[in-house]
Image 1 (tube, helix red, strand yellow):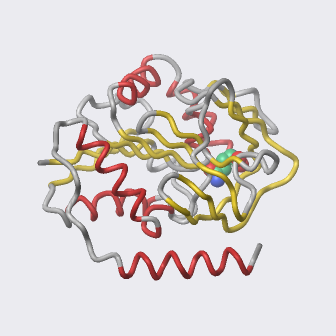
Image 2 (tube, protein in one colour):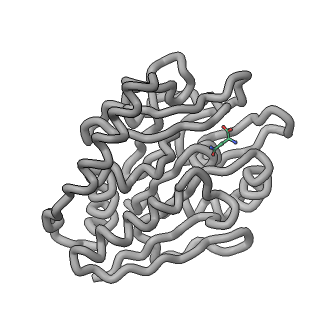
Length: 240
Ligand code: GLN
C-alpha cells in the first residue's frame, strides 16, 4: 500500500517549519509499513490524480499573489474535486487563506481563493504572533501562529476548533481554522504535525480509507511526540 502526498508550492509556500508536516506524514505512514511518494506541485504543474493527501504551507503576501494566479481556474477546480472525492488535506496560514473565497492583503488587489472553504480573509492592522492551543475533536492541539490575515467563517463553515491560548482565525470569535470533509485549514505553524500525532494519523487514515484501506492504523510509540507537545503547551501557557 502506498500513500501519495501532494506538496503544494514547496518552494514558495513553506515557512516557519511547515516542511515538518510533510516529514511527519511520510514517517508515520512508513512506520506502519506503507510506501510513500511525495510529489511537488509548483507553479504551472497540474494536480496529479493519484494524490491521497495534500499539504499547502504558509507564505508571504508576495508569494500568495503568484500562487493565487496559478490556482485560479482548472488547477483550483482539480484540488476541490480531489477533496470532494475524499482526499485529505492540511493547509496552514497563507495556503489556508487561498483555499477560501478571497484574501484581501494590505498592499495588493484582493486575491481570489478557490472557494474550497467557505471563509474570507482580510489583512488586519495587527500581526498575530505567538503560541496557540486549540480545543478540537482530536483533543487539544498546539502550534505557533504568525499572520496578519483575519479569517471569518461564512455560511455553515465549521471551525477546526476553539482557541484556548492565542488568537486563531481572527482574535474575535475564538474560532481557529476550518474543517470541511477531510480537509483542514488552520493558522498552526510550528510545525504542527510532529507535536500533534493524533492529527497526522487522522489525515493518513482519511487518505487511506478513500482507497479502501481497512483502519485502524497500527499503534506507534509516541513518547517523543508527547514530550514535545507537553513542552510546547507549557511554553504556550507561560507566554500567553
Ligand atoms: N501573508 C499571510 C498573512 O500575513 C500569511 C502568512 C503566513 O502564511 N504565515 O496573514
